Length: 245
Ligand SMILES: [Zn+2]
Image (cartoon, rainbow, N blue to C red; front, side, top):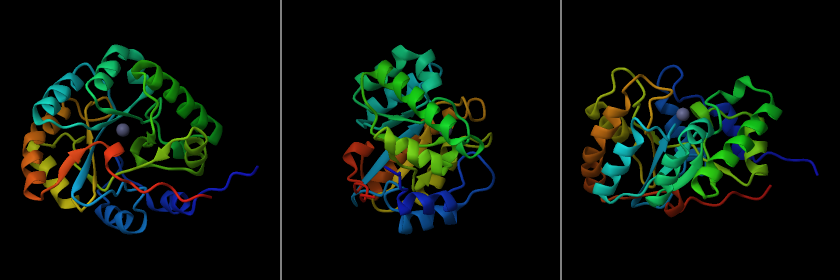
């Protein structure tokens, strides 16, 4: 049977270019929220999905687990297979703490630079490792840098994964990120039902950048409370299921 790509995924491949590359494309975030709500992770109003990419990392992830526990928050962790392989017990701790486990791929490489079969191999290998380390089968996939190719869409669907990006980010990977800047960036992109992208590891970011993210969390609690937003993982966010075909 021929595999057909969902229209949203094709549109996304044209629209999406962000993450750690290049300048901020805040307009893309706005377009994505309106035109591609499933891909942006738009869920029910009154709720914000909190997501962390690039871990698990023994240098930083335990501090995030402590702070999330203090705040009473559960989040979604988009793990890298390479990190989960190296730090399998920590990956298991994230799951045991009640957080949702999701997949960020095995390697942190742009899919636009990889042949479709290599993308498929990367996702399958990452899924095996993350599922093995955590005992959970991820439901969500977020490609490195938020960059989707047609091969990404095919591979993730074949593995039963739903691709999701974000609608707001903290720009927390830069050398200049501070808790204040992270909160400001999230506030700028915040919309009803939004999905927030942060990082619990600096393995693809400026060294120590995670400290800005960690410092921002209590202030984000104030921000979300001011907007009367409950915080949780994507599994509780009410993102619409994909259309068939
Ligand atoms: Zn990443």
